[in-house]
Length: 637
Image 1 (cartoon, one colour):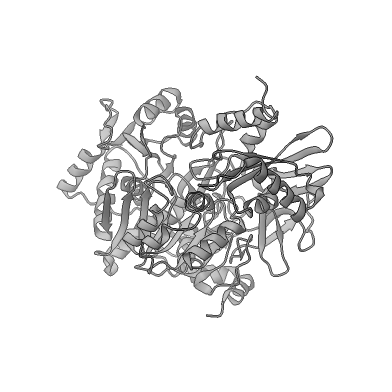
Image 2 (spheres, helix red, strand yellow):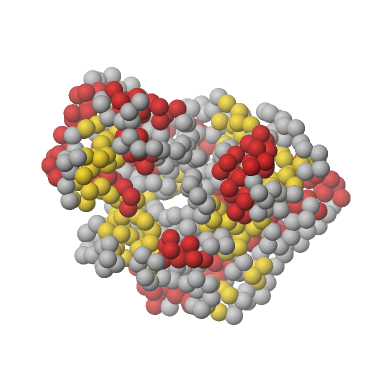
C-alpha cells in the first residue's frame, strides 16, 4: 500500500495537541485532562496535565473486561531450561493482583519506589505491573548487576521494597542474585524494609528472617484469600518508573517515565509504526532491565492487546544459531524486535542462513532492529535470508519509543541501508554544528530534537531537574541533545553515524567510526567489527579496527586484515588514515549487545579504565588487551 507517513507527519506538525489528543482516545482515563500540553509545567512542559489514569488497568483489566480474558497475554520461553509457560490475560491479571496485595500488605503505597532485580522470568513483568497497579514507581535493575551498582540505585531511588529472585541463568552457569542483593543492602545508606524473593529451582537461597518474604508463598496466600486490589488512580504526569542509565561513575541518572503520555505513545506505535494488530504475537528479544524490555516486552504489547514473548536465552549457543527461528515458529511470532548485534552473531555462526530453512516462519512478517547502529551488510543478509522487510529504527532510553522509524503500519517507505528511517510524529529532528547552528543537508553534525519532546519522553531525571537541564538541554537552547552524531539527507532520512564521543578527529578531519565500520562489515569474511580512535602523536587520533571473522573462515588473517585496510582506503579515502586492523575472537559487549568501544579505546590508549558494570563477559577485555600488546599497541605492564 502507498505510505500515509507524510500525510500523518504533516497532520502532527499542523496541530500537535489535536494529534496527541486523538491518539489518547485509545487509552482509558479515569478523569480527562485539563490541558493536552501544559507548556508552563515541569522543565519543558507536561502532557495530559490534570488527567488521572492507571497503566495496569490499561494493560490488563480493560482487556479482561473487553473480551480478551482467554487470549494469551504472555509467553515465557527459556532456551536455557527448555521450559515454556503461557498466561492468558485473566491469569496474568490474577498474578498481578496477588503480588500487588503482597506489596500493599508490606507497606507499598502510591508514590513509593520498588526496585525490581530479576532475571527474564514472568515474575519480573508481574512485579512491574503490580507496582503500576498500586501507583508505586518501579525501578528495574538488570538482574546480576554488581552489588555496588545495585547499591547506588537503591540509595538514589530509596525503595520501600525490593522484588528479586534467587538466581539468574546464563549459558552454562547459574548467577546467584541473593548474595549480590544482600551485599548491596549492606553497602547502601537507605536499605529497603523488605525483599520479596522468588525461589528458582536451579538455585534456592536463604531468606533473612523479618526482612525477606518468599514470593510464591505470599502470592499463594493472597490468591487463596481472594484479595482484591483495585487499580489506584494516578496523575497522568505521575511517574510510572525510573530507569537508570548505565553509568558506572558518580550518581546514576534516573530517567523518569510518566504514566499518561507513555501509554498514549506506546499504544500509537504498535499499530502505526510496528504494524502489529491486537491479538497478534510480538517478540522483543531484549531484557526487562533495559528500556526496550520496559516498552516492548511489557507495556506496549499489553496496552495494545497483543501476546508478548519473554525469552530467556541468547541468539547463539542456546543451543545454536537457530534459536530465534525456533521461537518464531513455536509461537507464531509476526514481528521480532532485536539488536543488530544479535543478528551479527547469528550471521557469524551461520553465514549461509542454513538454520532458517529448518523452521516454519510463515507467520513472520517483519524484523525490527535497534539498540546500536545496524550496518547495511547485516540488514542485507537478513533481507536475503528471511525474505521479509528488515526495519532499522533509532531511539534512546530517554525517549522510551522510536525517534525515527520506517513506519510499517502507515505503509513502508523505501528502505535506505544505513538509515534508521525518518522522524516519527512528535519529533522535529535538526542537525547542528557545535555552535548550535543548523548544518546543510548531508553534513555530519550533532543530532538534536526541537523542544518540546512528545508524550512518553522523559520529563526530567529522578529528583534532579537541574542535572536534566545541564545534561540534555543546556548545550543547544531550545533543543534536546541526543549526544549522537548524524546526517539528514534531502528526503528526511536520518543516518546516525556514531555517539558524538565516537567521532574521531584525524589531522583536523571529523570522521565517523560508523562509516568505517560499514566498510569493514562489507568484507565477506567479517562477522562483526568495531572501529575506535586511538591517540596518535602526529594526527591527534588514528582509527583502529577490530574484526571478528565468520565461523569456518580458514584464510590467513593477515591477508584479510590487509584487504580490509585496502577497502577503507578505496571507499573512504586516504583521509581516513586507516592502517591497522586486529583480528579478535569476539567483541566486548554489554548484556544488551552494545559494543564497549569507549573501554576498548581506553585500553588501547593506556588510560586507566573501570570494568563496565553492564559487561557480558569480562574475560573478553583481557583477550583484547593481549592482542593489542602482541601488536605493540595497548597498556604497558
